[in-house]
Length: 293
Ligand code: ADE
Ligand code: ZN
Ligand code: ZN
Image (cartoon, rainbow, N blue to C red; front, side):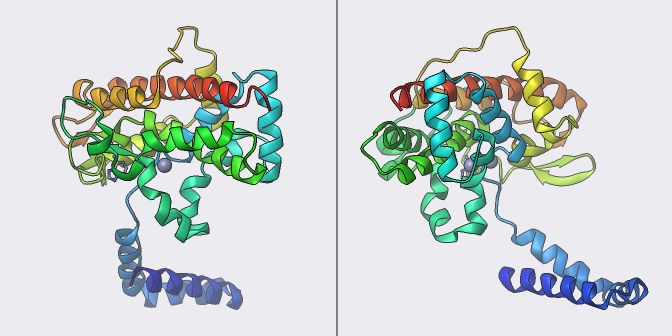
């Protein structure tokens, strides 16, 4: 059903273009407005739940990390990036999400690696319970980091591992990617944002960051210029536990379902701090894994 509607929409677009007559297109749209609206609603309602910081968040994390690489790690990363036709970590930061369209089979196999759901508000990570079969973001970072660090692995495999690591270190710092509320990381928590219905997960993945009107590059520069230090230490399990505690203690879940300016003024600085931590920790991880090439 969802696929059919999407294909239908593309066919419509091609038809309209090939006529090349704007008037005709306008008439056409008017005549079919009802059907188009229904199709649009169907397509939107078929859109899968968000799985990550939006593209901007991941680009920012990658950009912050790249600026903190050692010369050795930078050289090794550049070689691996080149295998994927890329030059910068930003270029591969959203690949793991793009798989949804570019390689649905691989996406299906990896989609549970973008988050971890905690058992309760104690925010204590218990792998057998919270990460069965190693299918969560904590185990994913450890797994792909090990593949990346092992120079006996084929370069293409290490390059893919690099793309996963860059993405997942971003995800684990998005508080709702390590949540305890049993609401799919806020995907099932409906809110209103600027007069529209959406969900809390989306507010954190994209809407709040996009509302700043800064480009990813400007946002990265702004965060990189901040003087206060961020802790680069710890391991993925701790990063996830931090995210869970932020959900619990720092007002991520609004009292009312309206996301207003007060909410953004309070929560955006927390999101920015998480991006900075993610960048610093990703850099530390890559500096370690790529220290010898
Ligand atoms: N699906 C289920 N839990 C999720 C989470 N915490 N983040 C993203 N997608 C999810
Ligand atoms: Zn993701
Ligand atoms: Zn997400």
